[in-house]
Length: 107
Image (tube, rainbow, N blue to C red):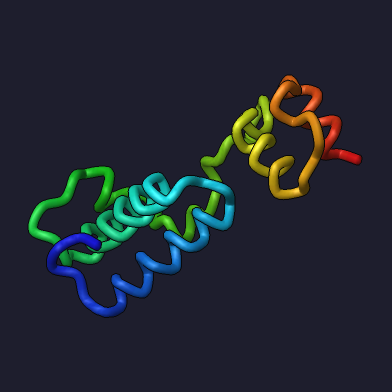
């Protein structure tokens, strides 16, 4: 957890970390995403000493809520499809292409 945080930010960090891990990311990646999110929120509300322009003028992560995830023109990434296939215990997923994963998940 970043230095100088309070109890609310600690809870926020743990909640985000648990959510990311539940989606199938590694512990290290979950900690990185949680720390970045909490740091950005701290910068937005003036709790940090320094903040980038994008941190203070961008839409909050809570409001954004996946609006920039890979669901655009090409859909989900192969890694996202693979993680869902892993959660649903689909056999043969490691050798499947992106299209095959999409087809297997649509059943």
